[in-house]
Image (cartoon, rainbow, N blue to C red; front, side, top):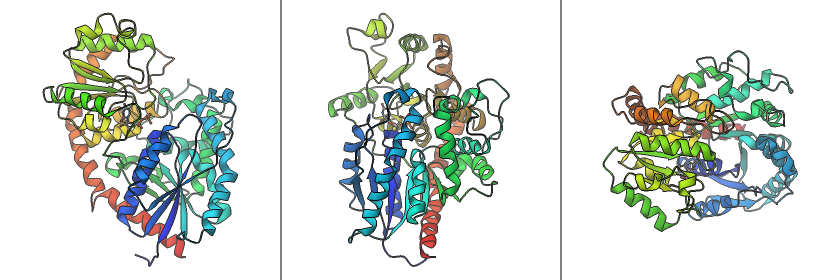
Length: 467
Ligand code: UDP
């Protein structure tokens, strides 16, 4: 390894919890890997995410080599622009650029700082590559999602700025995919004329200005995607460093100790491999009529369940929210909760299946614990993830691949059939998920592919800095 004194990376994660948790966990892994590296995390105050603050602080309390600097608060874009949340975030990040620049300049002049060797940027922070360029600092993209998503956004580089996708037309050839991609599984913003497409188009232009793409995935899962993407010579080195998962789980203001204990006690009381866990991510919720269909399907399946809802019903409105008599008729079989300790739940021996929105963290966590998924994508790039898990990897059971909240309901019958298939322990999917579980774990331990890739990343950062 090249000679290196203490070095510092400046990390700018997105404040969304799904991004933040893996970003900080990744920083911890780098530090564990090489004791000479430290991090300064620039903390973004986003209008709707007060929670991120307390989370970062709790992580930092035990990490002397991760320092936090708050970026100044800026006026958020007009609420009208929320028609495309991605565009809104994009504009918000653009408005931060002068502050990011002056904050980094201050760090560069701080007497007690280690030499800064680069910026590590979340996908939504890609515009900040310009700041890195101006200050002569190399930028790295830290992608909290996967190589398939990267290939999809990368393909925008070959399109026009106003060439918003239409939902009808032939399936698409996209770098990183071994089969043609139906338009119905593309991420929402690609269809958005309200700035969503434009935002992704602009972010994609920055990919090739980075010095490396760090992906929270592992080559055993996405070998084809990594190889295919790298056929494009303009793509900087790609480092697969995952699964990067916070195995301790995250504290959450919506989950107190008593509720946590109640959930875990309930799981303890269930027979091994008997429970299906339903959870739709940090933001996923279903319409009232869809919630009722799900309740009906779940009840008819007869399977034990733990159902995490963002707004769980109260005793008074449960009959309306779920279906009449649902709570009474399922009281011996099921539990409904708010925020779930998902990591601990998936690790529990009573869990045999996971009805999931297919957020990337949830997918990695399910593979890590060998719990197969029934696919119910809702927002972001989840349809794309569901499509790949089912069609490309054979690692999930298909419920829907192209579900959208404004589309057709998933009916109780489909749900009942899906859950029955999910809980079939002799299925090919279960077998493959168990195999992938072993590969996921091997990847991150010493001599595994992601461990090696993390080492390569550190070496490349050092080499770039010393030449
Ligand atoms: N999560 C949790 N309890 C919940 C909902 C979510 O612990 O009730 C965690 C989950 O374990 C995962 C993260 O929140 O680490 C959600 O990330 P993901 O990428 O799956 O979805 P997102 O919330 O970003 O859509």
